[in-house]
Length: 412
Image (tube, rainbow, N blue to C red):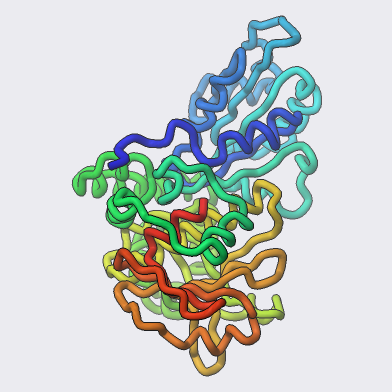
């Protein structure tokens, strides 16, 4: 049984090679308590000198407000061959962080490296007119997945495709089943997964939600009624899987449509949940349809089938983000639904073309044929994914039934 966390996270070498070693800033964002700071400090161990700064530290706040350049004075090495790294944690909470960081980088990037981490907003500032454009690469850190916990390096999309569809079934280690069961129950967040204890999970979960609601949302916006956000979080847990109705949430909360939409935006920005939109060849049509939502902490979901689907969604999104963040192409996660209400849980799109579809079944090993309504148009492989272990069945050249402990091993 794998009780220890991976020594280095799956994005470790890519951050160094793609960003820091090429003179770019590295921006790492992701859910609260997913391990961003730990990974940043781990990256710093390979530098001759590193300094860590956290926005919540009063001394650093004052230093940053007075002159960001003053942090350069903390570095003592004068050897031009020595490598230096400044780690800046949660500085997105400063209103002028982009402009100040830009000036700091432009003057000093020839002699040192910069790594910025945050649990919100970094992904927002990545869009539109960005004063940091061309100076950084952005990496999204996800919770542990099956492959990462098996201490196997992430695969490229082509390697994933080859292992799943071209090479045929391989022998599965008993560890796969054990690790996956532990992931399903305790999530992929380091603290509860490694503790393997329901009491620790419950305490950790409540602490994390409390910080998101009472600290992170207040930093993000002037939300007055925090109690409404608390109720919204509980409502979202029961709405994992089906298309989300904002109107239904509005009625349950007895508030305006705009308020619910704004609160949902905050929770998405803070990596509490993520939407999966319906796929359509028309982007405009896709955006008008209702998205499904999933939680980064799938252990919150009580229903067994919905939790299993959520865990699979987490693995798929992690793969899409990793492949895109490391330059493999443009990847996105969607679901399928037609006018006859036939539906397939997930579709990964690769460079605007269907890559493969996935239907999740808790214990149904008989083929569900609803995917056939889409397969002729999509022309990509389809996988019916089951929670029960030990299955790998090839129906035809484009259709498979396989167990989750097999499929998820070949992702990231």
